[in-house]
Length: 136
Image 1 (cartoon, rainbow, N blue to C red):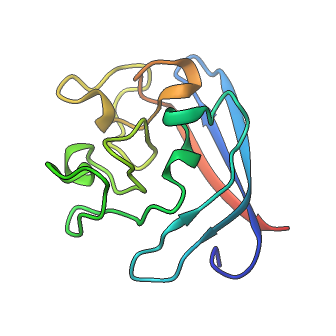
Image 2: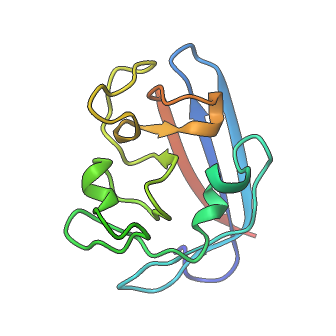
């Protein structure tokens, strides 16, 4: 569905203290398999700012535990971060990471929890994350 025409992506986040935020991304679509490259335009400044935002992964293929397609040559980011994603380097967003106690930081690797660094400018694990898309 995400490869059939123009769509808009919305990401909703909830922190451990029940603070919420969301961002919408225009012209979102995924390329066909086997790479499923992410195509996205910049979202709002709070959740998509420069190097730390999702649009930094624009054009990147989806990287998984068994198929390393990230942009980091010395390790598989999906293995290191405990979650598949469109990694451009190690990454500051990991909505497919381990679900650890919300508000905590995974002690062995702060990026391996369910995190979105720009939300509260820290590595604390989120309570809820939702990714939704719709045709526009």
